[in-house]
Amino acid sequence: MLHTKEAVDDLLTTDELAKITGLAVITLIHWRGEKRGPAYVRLGRAVRYEREAVAQFFSEHRSAA
Image (cartoon, rainbow, N blue to C red):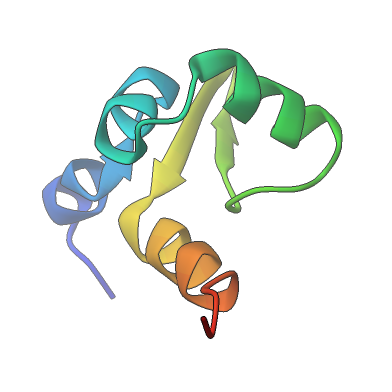
């Protein structure tokens, strides 16, 4: 189990994830609405993505080509 600070440091905002992946913020918002994309955590109105969940999502959608 992660300590609280480590757990918080492991979370990305939608803006941070968009910058890291090169995806548009609106794409991530649409994916959430469509229940696609990386798993996320909702803390009140705030949405956060765990780095591990993001890595898993992209690993699962990797092309074999």
